[in-house]
Image (cartoon, rainbow, N blue to C red; front, side):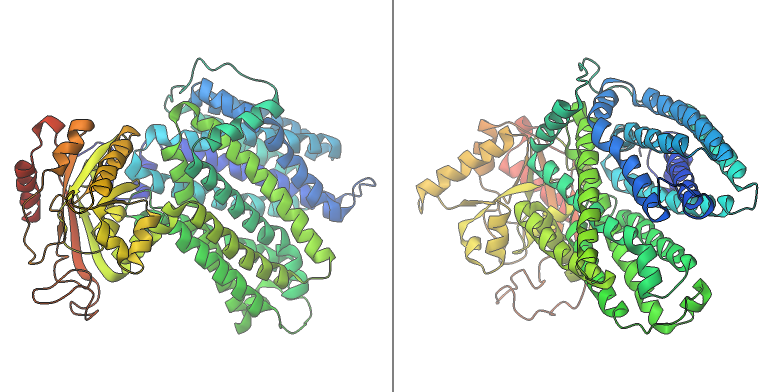
Length: 629
């Protein structure tokens, strides 16, 4: 047992490698929003600023806060890769104390220019912290903890945003003393964040010899090129940025949606924010449970489907609400029709959490450690650009006469189109979704020994061959893609053949039957292992016809001669007799419910075998032993 083993993601809050970092980022996000919301309320309702109209205040403050992300994200990514991340965290928290002290002076003296300068500086604070926030986790959490850790951070961020907004609104509304209390609250949160930062353990630099390029334009372009070097990572960055586009449409339109469509007061707008935050937090926490503590990107299409379904239903739930006088939150909740609106909002945000957390974890897992922070910086740049485009697009639609529910409808439809396009560009998401659905909805799937499936480096996964979905089941258990060598005849099976071609499975035929296909298969296998990837093989050479383990053929030895890599023996238990396997005296895929719903299936992975210790007979003995476990 590892000293880091724990029952669930909440147990991380008792460990020094995670807890101080979690509370540091929590307090930072909360303080950002306490400050921004209190300032927005003050200039909207309490002060008369001739050069800034109340209806413009939120847009100006939001734009000033985002601007540093565009200007300095590339530089912050370099700093995070070059220096100890804990040192960067402490520097950022020192900066926060100075900025909040200046903001306290601005609140007490009602000095709007000073407060606007502090908005920009707090945006800079968040820009510097952004790459640290996601580059820190992979250095302290293993692959089995990464999804849960990201879920906790995502949940904590939205809870902090919610609490910061609530605290800022309540404090600034206090007669006469509101501004002073906001100033005290901002400085106190900054000091407390600096205290927790002091407890964050050392996190060594990943590229200490990096030479800083201080030109933000050229470095931004270089970061984007760096991210584009890994196409799966880059398209995942685009997928996350699209999620921020999607979320920004809803968050920016809550006030007008609450007022003009739901006929509620400002407390109803706050209620929508609460529901949205609870949904994101819940979805983020569910990721670890549904992924069985792995980086499960099969959740991403699942999340995208839910985002579209419930944003489209939100249009139908809100389009014909009768006009009434402005309602309080209690009056709003007393109407049955409004519960459907809140349910849609809760579920679309919950599915957004399921969509985003695995993507963040994938980027952390697949990015090169030496420039991981710069990849995160590229992500922050794209996020900012997408949010700006989102605001412009939503504003243009509203300016053209479309209603807020119609904007939500268009966003839901666009989400379906964009997600479908991303999943066709990166088939791994779609394949993992199919594997996720098969192993959760067709079978009751359990995995044992999955720690033996390597998260990095080349290896061969050798399994018994029981059914037409063995490869899909293996995909569901692996933390990264597996390229399979498969009998060329399986590619002729409807649907499954298309899936395996999408997975870039390697067809193989007997040498006597088709020498060219046989030779090409071994050449492709050699290339897969040379690139450091996983190769999946079924040494029996075909699906068993009687449920028993067949003799292993010698093809694996030919592969190992070219690329001597570790071999991981895997046993698939209880698949024999299920819908996708043959049965004695019959064919596969006959009588769908012949074993009932959710029949139990188990995958057992054994310890890797060194290449010099592998032989077909010895490997078969190991798989047979795992079948009997």
